[in-house]
Image 1 (cartoon, rainbow, N blue to C red):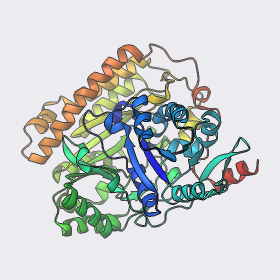
Image 2: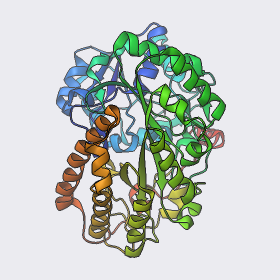
Image 3: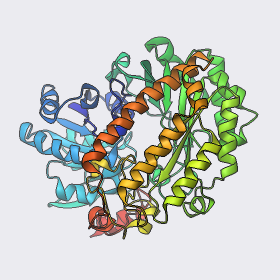
Image 4: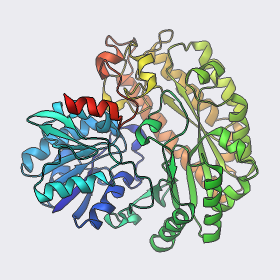
Length: 504
């Protein structure tokens, strides 16, 4: 059975770094088990090759597939592209089965099956075990309805089977590296790069984030085996940088320390970048020299806000003092601290943005990045935001880089200018320019200069985009009217919800 794994072209600005794209880890994670189960798999990466819809369909059709499996880490922002491709694929390949997986269809499976007749099946939740079971049923001519983690149609009506089996052993499913040419994937200013997960899930309770619900429970790979896989990629494929896709790879100090020690023992020259929490960095102050020896170059710290009231409302669990201390500690140990700050919460005023700027200047991060509050229906934050007015109805732009909802006290154009001012003020400070262009450490200097070049491109692109798209006033429709009125279960594979729907 011939299977094409399709990574659609993504239009979100955060995913379009010219000339630099990481491999589609989700599809590779599904591809490895499919290959091991005997399926003939090929990958069409329309994102990497920058293919228009017609060219994407032609590239898929060239493999004469029996099934096309579509997925994208962009999830909701990529869904309009997937919906369009499904129509085109159905016209060009009427006999090919279409399967869709990822965060968005895992939660919105019913709506997707109702609105997209070209999509036959949806893999909900983790796909490493579900996709091979689904494809085996299709190959053998048995009805997949009722399989764990599979949604489809029965007599034209969307139906979902029982919850998918959570992957307890993250080392049990092999990543299909043979599906890509690693040399074509670069990041961080031309470094040969891959993306990996040490862990899945998040033990924290932030209201705006879906990591906890989608992955169900925080788990991690075997630290020694994970380090060995990275070392093999370095030695055999020339990988120079590993981007960790985890939200919180450092959640277990014991497991993270074991991984760092295993990396040092492997003795390979590789850089590691990722995201974590500021309080984990402060917790590990005695381990930071080990971080550096293992290859850690930068951690993104999701500060989300600098106001203690906002942090409490979002259930972030952090504090301003730890945020500032984490940035200081990373710099003191030869690593970069990238501070993200979030805007777009209902109570914000111009005075809040001014205070945010002053607080970030006091934090003194090496790099800074803005994000906008985005109300996905499977997060608790949606219930708080569903009555707010939408200023960006295009789902492709719900990418955390565009303002989605109105801020009652500040018009959208002024929110945009505040964000750009804060970014510019942080990145154009004399000490920031010194770290970027006169940094004595060669690796850090390369990283800072690359981020500055990329930031200029994005900054100018966002200004050009704003001239056409940032509205002067709040929108007419509410979040509920644009995204759907009812919150979705936070757990992607919520057994109560699945049983209820299956019995309807």
